Image 1 (tube, rainbow, N blue to C red):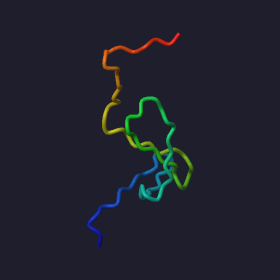
Image 2 (cartoon, rainbow, N blue to C red; image 1 turned 135 degrees about the vertical axis):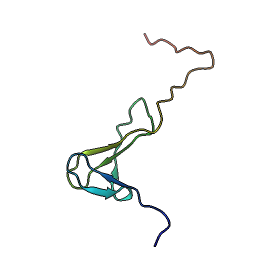
Image 3 (cartoon, rainbow, N blue to C red; image 1 turned 180 degrees about the horizontal axis):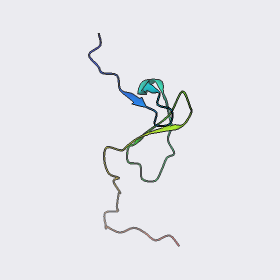
Length: 70
């Protein structure tokens, strides 16, 4: 028996349960990049989103302001 617990997720759309390692990763490359995990369900092909574990971290310049885009 393995000492490592296999992480599983349940699809909120169809209710099927899968090991995360068996699912295809899906990412929309959003601007917030909070470290959330997104997978495609192997049964219904809908996106399974795991809620981010930390709030978004916004990087600022050393002067503390953002340049304007005109």
